[in-house]
Every structure is written in structure tokens, then in C-alpha cells.
Length: 170
Image 1 (cartoon, rainbow, N blue to C red):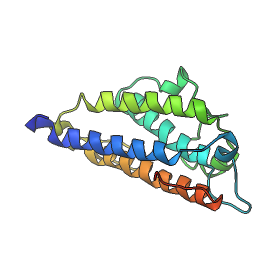
Image 2 (spheres, one colour):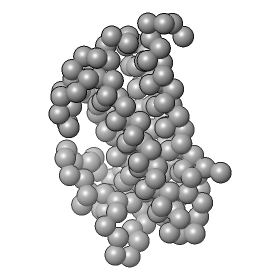
Image 3 (cartoon, helix red, strand yellow):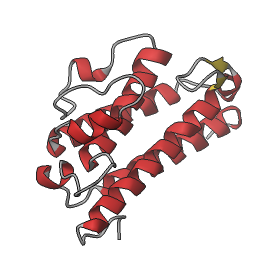
């Protein structure tokens, strides 16, 4: 690890850890569980939580930051419809997920994210970036991706726990 990219490499490691934790939390999830809405629930399904992490990261990296098309245009993201921009609560209760294609898509998104991060220098992280939550330094925006993956892993873990299953990886 070079001195000039220590912060970038730390963010890459944190994001890899968050992705691995999310993937581990999905252990044992099949399509039925991915689409289950507990009675009276106002919480998005496991499949929707997973899709939120992957599709938003795909959009942030490939569209917002690289100026290209999202990977979901050429890959099956494993969801019945793309998420809306903004409030995704209603979508999160209604979307249907297929966990196997979701996991394949996730691996492609995570690899594209890491490849993009590998192009950055520590100085790039301080550049102000327009984001869906306001202007902020790029490094702070990437930090939100780490947080997002962990937060949604928590929701997935809780939903699994309500079914009597182990949530987080053992």
C-alpha cells in the first residue's frame, strides 16, 4: 500500500468488509424468505434491502461518478422492477427478488466499485461531489456506502431473526 493512497485503500478494505458482512448475512436466504413480508410489517423485504444496496452502489459508481450506464442495464439484478429514485418504501414491500441472480449481480457491482476506487488517489477523496443527499467530499460519500451496506445487513439480520434463523454470520 503506497503512502499516497492509504485512505483510499482503507476505504476499499472497509467496503470489502461491509460487502462480505452483507453477503454472510444472506446465508440461507432463498427466494421465499427474500420476498417474505412479516404480518403488519412496514419494513422492506430481505430481497429489497439487498437490492437497495447493490442497485444504489451500481448507480453511484457507474452513472454518477463514471458517467456511464448502470450494470443492471446488461445484467439481471434479480428484481422484478428497478427501484425508484428517492423514497423506495412502497417498492421495498412489493418488489419480487430472485436471490441467485441478485448475488451474481452484487458480485459484479462490488467488483466494479473496487475497480473504480482503485483509480482514486487520496487527494480525490476531498473533492466535493454532488450526491443524492447533498454536496460532500467524495470520501464521505464512499463512507456512506459502507454504512449503507452495514445498515441493510442489520435489517436483513432482523428479518431472519423474526423467522427464528441466525441473522449475522456465525
